[in-house]
Length: 600
Image (cartoon, rainbow, N blue to C red; front, side):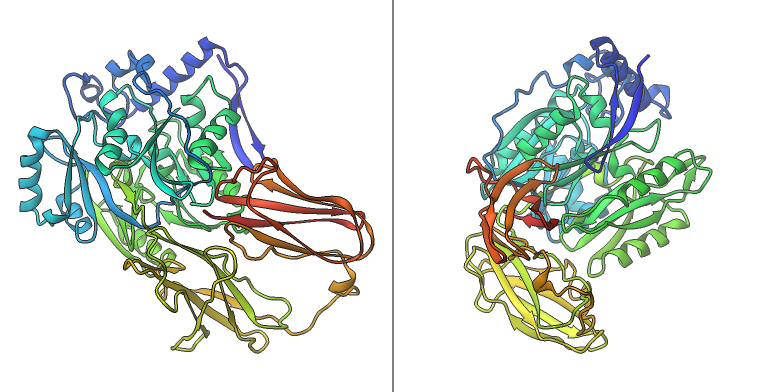
């Protein structure tokens, strides 16, 4: 027997086990592996790897005898060069990776045809199966000019679980591969084949996991279920987090208890990041076996903050019954540029699920597709986006409601043309209007001294006015984008507040720590503060896990205004990864801190 307990580590829900002996670790793996078999007919569980090229998502009985082979063919490579930024799933992609087994793809031809309208369909298949795949796709209306065949032996259709993650390492595009949590050597090698085909470096880790049990925000925050702990019994949570940071630039790794005792235990079965500040979470009926654990995880997510320092917006999607005690899996969707592909189950709740997505993601085209979906497997599991290595990165911390309305409203945006073609003249542009108006005013946003940072001012408006705005940018390579994604149907909104100040102490007399500027930033930012009296001062930088990164000030200083620059490097001069950082001002008059975002 082993005992387990949950606790909070830096705001992250974590499950650890008290007995980490080899025997207990083996029992954990075998116990969890047996759970994968629950609910599947015996005949499907007895498939042998040598007899099938279409193994099921769960472990077969034969595979349970070969668990020691997991990861045996992969040796970890050195990690990428810092700084590292992993791409979020909603960022621009050039294509989508799927797999053909000689008979089908695991997703419908209608879905593939729709994807092919604007994307490259990277198709894993054996060389002798290419003609069959071509003929079937062509007959189904797939745009064959947008199909690229990658000859590769595979064991299963779950490209999400064994496929690569996209990163920028020191500004260059690359892929990261984990050890697939199945003894399926051909699947485990697929990412390296893809990297070779695309001419991209592939960095291999020694972490056992699956792509369906991972979601990140592009700013160094990521989520998984505690399955990742069970899959790596010789590693601590801290060890796993270090791998995430070294290879993917993840500084804050949130590990949550899974919602169910059976199934595959992946986070995409019940939660999905829609953008940096919004998480879609499954909702089921009260007497469903997973109801209590889902609601407990929602309560945990509500305590966490996004990369911009605000609580997440939790959106619920009701997942109706597809059979006894089995719910639909609408969170297992995939975002590919301006389209969202949602699994449908031919039940009454399908229409409401589409409506939920449309309300949460204005400006996107939300499309539903039926298929041979399970309660813990659908479109997301069977496809994975290949990001655009020359994407136009646009990032901004949206303006929040004002208390004091005493001047113009400055919008700061980070724009990085990874294509190297430069931005077109007059880009980026800030579009703004008062709520209720139909047309926008425009402001060209000039660059600051720092690379890729632009600002623009919305003129001061009347008290308590609601202002709407979005940002558009375009490069000379033909790529364009907006923030928020989906603009102008999606829009940022803030209230101007009033022109009065309250309180006994004016800002000039109090200890004041301002928001760093610019924010987000790259490569440097300025931190300003006001001291009400002379005294000893420290100004330190911390990463999202609370580790000190740099100390900018540790000295006696005079009262008045002060400003210090942080260059995005640690005390040893190493460039830090994209992500969330905190700066803390500590004086005899008090302590204050704020959050900032570094993006590479």
